[in-house]
Image 1 (cartoon, rainbow over the protein chains, first blue to last red):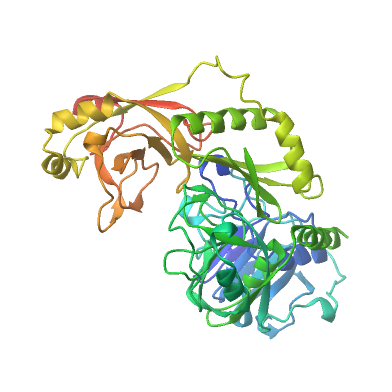
Image 2: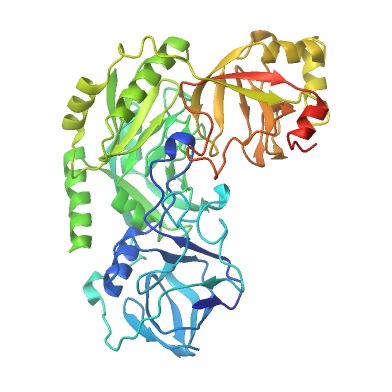
Length: 304
Length: 224
């Protein structure tokens, strides 16, 4: 016994960095949607960066601790209580046996992360604890967390706390500009279409989940209807027949046959993952060289 | 071979622009030589009909250095005499599991026996795996039984169902919604957590379907 789920959360999943090297047989990467909030959580806890965590969407989850530990909540701004006392996120808390941890309403952003010191003890499936519901893989029996589930961990007694500096806490309400590396079938979109794509403001629709994010706004047309199915990258922007972009995220299918104009930078997909339907996004081009240096910088600063 | 950026940390290599055995063979050979590198900086390698997608560690390679490395490593000659792996899959082509057999028979004016014989007499290539874990796209199906996808997809296609769509055939490795025509069922596991390879099929393999009786199917653990 360690952390017991007391209520029935809508969508709480055990995740980690993801499941790699099985894409060739159709297994998706999965993994946390927002790596920034995830790495910060593990870094505050003093964990290895790829330690597992709970990703909570649509809020409202209650746990009872049956061992001492240290926890942290990062990601979306939310109501957070320990034994009914409202507390701030992005800092560690020392938990005692019997404590009730509650995450209430999400106030800004859309995914909350709850990590514990040294992570949960769960058998990995194909090198990962990441839960992929459509594949019935990872987590506890391939499923989302249910009332009565028990997440075990090694008990830990500690008295100090660690807090993230205010300036590093993201504001999830800002209009997001997604940097795009033009790629894949870019040559099948003429200059007018590319200019339209980069000058339009798009609205995130309700079709937004761990697989991808469908946008609404100016229609982009492609000279070809479809392509021979091929491997899809994280962040790839598909332009289906209706001309409205779909950005593919962590639980994307491994291959697909829609033309793609380019790919959103991975580190910008993490920010997108904290957006909500009806929020606005824009695209801006970035060269591959610059994109790689930005992404390297992100990972280097996480390690530090 | 044509190299193209896919994303900040991935590339895609094209080996032709149509679906045929020659292109598929090139993909298979290139895939084999890339896998043989055992290069940990190549994170995902996804072969498909005419392409191979690779995501890579950008701390180890950039686009140009990776392209150069792959150009010298990919070898199309060495495997010329490699034996083909043929995987036989037992299928019960019965009406109670092959929901669309009668409809296909009506449309093609072929008897169900003829459809089964045409389908099971061919050796298929595994062109790609995707959509679901272990879902292998096999081709090409004989033109006489070529069938378009259903106009409205089924909400649930049972695990193990053998399906047809256009020039392709496949088995659903798990229960799933789907729009392909169903012509039979196998008791074989196509995505098995107990298998070290997870999936008995990989791109470049060949597949042969073996028609079995209802009794044999049930004896293998098949579910009607």
